[in-house]
Image (cartoon, rainbow over all chains, first blue to last red; front, side, top):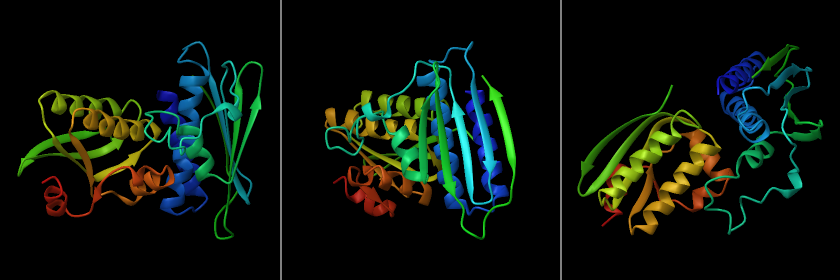
Length: 138
Length: 114
């Protein structure tokens, strides 16, 4: 889980450097953390020989974060709706939902092997100056 | 910061004062163990005080839900007290705000178990 903490810290740095307020920063950092946890646990199946990679970019208009794993792939269309009455009391299955709820755009790309998530949060005019960062981590 | 849990009793209610993060690998397991321990001892009235919980993730939400359902299955109640803005935000987005009994006042929360 060290890589998740590393990705989370980088996301926090990105939102802070963009001047995002605490509430918005929390939402973005949480979404990024959920994506990293998914990549390590569900994507890579906690296999220490597989890596996740992450990149962080402030385009001036948006924060763009990509998280990729080396797993078997994910079909987002097959994920159950955690708000459905029959799923509301399930102990799992809220990660992707939270990511989608807290960000403006979420894109999935199959890598063969692996899945890449691109997470986009649009900035308000008061926020943002260009900062880029890349992480490759297990 | 990991999760710390302290337990106290008041008017037949067991209050768990939680502080820190309820996340995968940091607080979820501690919370699960604490709830299972209380239910195993036959405690029926459990109040989770979350005023010092500054972060929760989907795993932590799952633990809250599991605590709620485990308690219900044993004819016990798990209720929530003093949500921080961040935790409230996450509970509202996931509609779990409608599942739990949630209070801002400890005396009121304790009274609700009677």
